[in-house]
Structure formats: structure tokens, C-alpha cells
Amino acid sequence: MLVAFPVYGRIGWDPCESRAYERNSWTLLHSLGSSKDFLPDIVWVVCESFVRRFAKGARDISRGWAGDVGDVTRLVLRGYQQHRNQPDQAAKWLDLIDSMSLENIGNIQAELEKAGK
Image 1: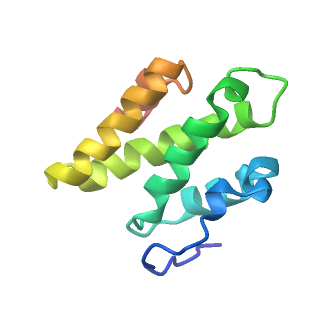
Image 2 (image 1 turned 90 degrees about the horizontal axis):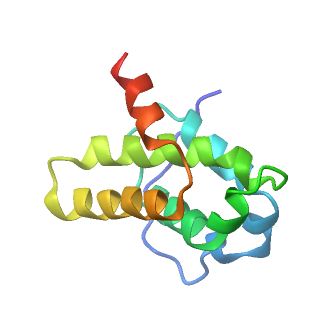
Image 3 (image 1 turned 45 degrees about the horizontal axis):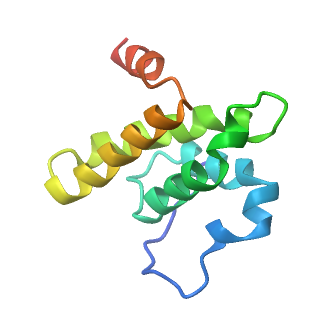
């Protein structure tokens, strides 16, 4: 099922800082990853929040976040690919790739190799 994501401005309440996102990030990440549309700006916020909040837990295979890392990695690489010709936007995505590498989550190299095939 494809879901079209409308473009919204920033809202006062950030769902990515909620306890609901902490308990179940998979639903949002999977929905965004399943979309074939151009990724809206909120995807960067979703991915950045995941890396910032859950990096430590994402390295622990016994935690649910470890299962979400693949979705985050694919979204981040897709976001960069879609914005690579927009220097300010591309830089944000590259910074997020760097953060994931520094936090040792996501296998960026493996995902790049898969995307190249």
C-alpha cells in the first residue's frame, strides 16, 4: 500500500520526541520507507531524532531499535540522493550519514553496494 505524504511545515509538537515514537519507531519508519514519493522534509527530522535518541540502543540487537536501523539507513541514503543537488539540504543528509557512522549504527557501505546493483 502506497501512502502519499503531504508536505507540512514544522509543528509545535514534535512526534519524534514522543514516548510513542520511542516505543514504536518502526511504524513511522516503515511507512516512510514504503512510500515511492519524493521524501518530505520531515523525514530528515524523523531520521535525525532516531540517531540522536536511540543510537546506543540500536547497537544492541536485543532492543527493537536495532531492527529499525536498516529502515533509517535506507531513508537517509535516499534523502541524500534526492537532495544531492541542493547544497544546504545535501549537507544535512551527509551530516546524518556521518553521525550514523560515528555512532556505529547502520551499515552504510552495504546499503550503498545494494543500491549500486
